[in-house]
Length: 295
Image 1: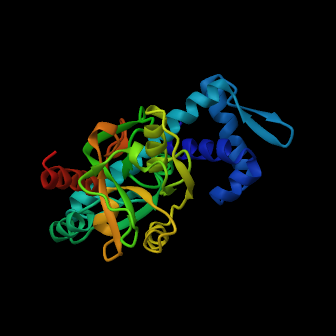
Image 2 (image 1 turned 120 degrees about the horizontal axis):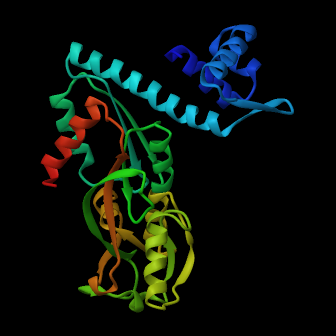
Image 3 (image 1 turned 180 degrees about the vertical axis):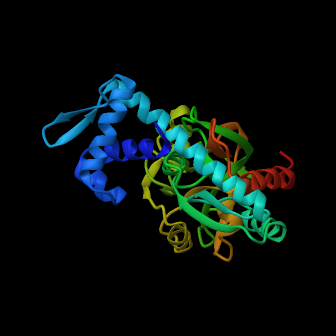
């Protein structure tokens, strides 16, 4: 077998039809069928079986498919790294950000661009769970996510854990000083950032549940700009991580830190796939981040 045959096999498995795979590969169907037959004869195993109009991969085919993906990925990574070494440090930094973003990232990226001016960027924003899937799909290489998450498939660089703040309109009649506990704010109508079951929303609700408290949840709003406007108008209050306050400035709000005794904080980490060779651009970014943040 050669790399061309492995790519053919990957297309057959993913498209599940010879005709669709042939169209994707821009070749005719008979040669593709012949290559599949030759691979099965060489390996002495049936790789796919017909099920109605579609092919289903066999157990032996699953094994070959897994290795074929790894080998084609290694080949592409080898080509990319050789080009980077030959042309100087360049490439593409593919980076994912949690919806609530990361404080100080623009400064780090500015510093990175000064050192590596030939690098181009793909920066994508999403929920942490979706970012994990994007990394698994290799749509991005690195992602800043909020923990906890199931991260057994990833290498994790733990960055920091930031505190949460209780935020109300500056027009609110109730005045708060110092710190507040979750028990102190149960009567406030809360709009939580993020989406139910994910990210910050999950962390906040988990903290209330752990303390056996029943908050007055008005709803959720993943649009942080709109959430801040709703708070300003005294429509609701909210609980947000510190990053939101540093990035969303100029609003007529009052922010009070939540008591550390409630054990509500938002750990942030940078992830990438285990057993995956990062591009040179990604390696350089990780090194600069560690240097900048002292981690």
